[in-house]
Image 1 (cartoon, rainbow, N blue to C red):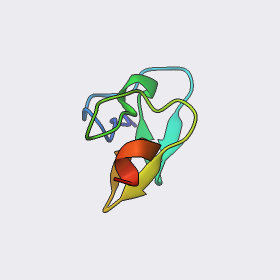
Image 2 (tube, rainbow, N blue to C red):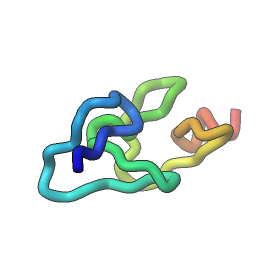
Image 3 (cartoon, one colour):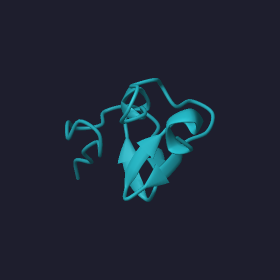
Image 4 (cartoon, rainbow, N blue to C red):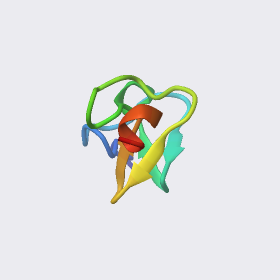
Length: 58
């Protein structure tokens, strides 16, 4: 079974899977939809989209 990334829709071939909002991602694809910064520690979501703290509370 091939698992595709929720961010780029490409297959995830990494040894470990990253799950955010019940979807599977490449680590490099977990980014804020507004500013594009990498979300490595915390992320916020609205309507299924990922945001950094500053963009979420804007």
